[in-house]
Image 1 (cartoon, helix red, strand yellow):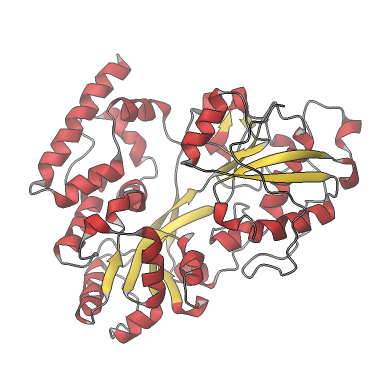
Image 2 (spheres, one colour):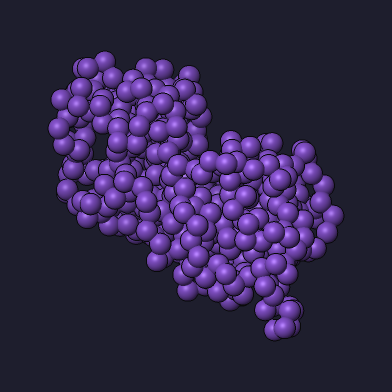
Length: 435
C-alpha cells in the first residue's frame, strides 16, 4: 500500500531502558494469538509470532509520547514480534482533519484512529477486526461497527468528573468532597476566598467545554440517548432540559466568579501547571487529564477525582464515553502485522493506565487510585449510545457547534435568545434533511 508521510516517522529501533511509571506490566492474556487477515486460510492464520512480519505506520495524536513512552512500548512489542517494524507518524494538525485528508487521497497509514465518519463508510477504508477474538471483551463494540462487523476498538474510555488538587482543598478548609450542587458551590466559595481559582474552564479554547454539552446533558436527563432525541423536535434546546440546565450550571459558576478571571484569555497548557501547583482548584474534564496534571508538577497522591454533583440529590451519575478507536487500513500491505499491533496495544501496552483511561476491555481493572476514589461513592456510570447519522447530518447543516453554543450562552445578556437562535437553525436544517 502506498503511504505518503507528512513527516519523518520514528523507527522502533529507538529503545528506552526505563519502564514507564503508570504503565501496565506485560500482560500475557490472549495476546499470544496473533491477529490475521480474515480473508486468509486457517493454515495462514495459525502463524507464530515470529512468522508475522512487515513494516507498518501508525498515525498517532499523542505526539508527546514519541521519543518517550512509545519507544518503551515498541521495545516490548518487538520482543514479542521481532519481525514487525512500527513507524510512528505524528499528527501535525487537527487529527480528525488530517485523517480525513488521508482518507480522501486513499493514502492511509496501516494503523490509525477513526475520524468522524458515518459507520456506513467504515468498510470503504478499514479491515474488520472480528478475527482478533476481542468482540466479547471490548466496551462500546457497536460504536464502530457496521453490518455486523467490527471496524474499530476503543483505545480507552473516559468518564467526566472533578479533578482536584487535594492540598488546595485542604488549604481552603474543605474536608470532604462535595456531594450536592450546594456543597460544590460552597467549596468553590472557600477556594475563592483563599485566593485559589475554583475551576479552570479553559473557556476560550472551546474544546474543554465538551463535557458540559455532550456528557452532562444526557446524565442530567438520565437518558443515554438524549442527544439523539433532537431528531424528534424543532426545539431541542430549552432552559429546563439537559442542555439548558448543564449550560446554566457553567453560567452560574462564571457569574459567581468561580472560573478564571478572564475566561476569554485562558491557556490550556498553563492551566495544567496551575492545577498541579494549586493556583487553580479543579477541572471538570475526563479522567484522561489526571496523569497530565501529575506530569505538570505534582504527585499522584495530591490529585483526586470525584463525580460532579450537578444537583442536590446526593446520588452521583456520570457519563462513560470512548476515546479514539483503533482501526486498520483495509488496503494495508501488512494487515496481519497491523492487526497484531492493535491487539497488543489493547491488551498489553498499558496505554490506558498511562493516559488515565478506564480500560477498553471489560475484564481489566484500572490501576489508577483516582478512578478507584471516583467509583467509591457508588457513582452510576451511564454508557452512551451511537450517534444517529441523521442527527449528525442535521447538526452539520445547521452548523451546530455545541461548545460554541455554550460559550454564547454563558456570556449572553439573555441566554434564552441564544437557545432561540439555535433552535431556529436546527428546525430549518431538520426540515431540509428530513424532506
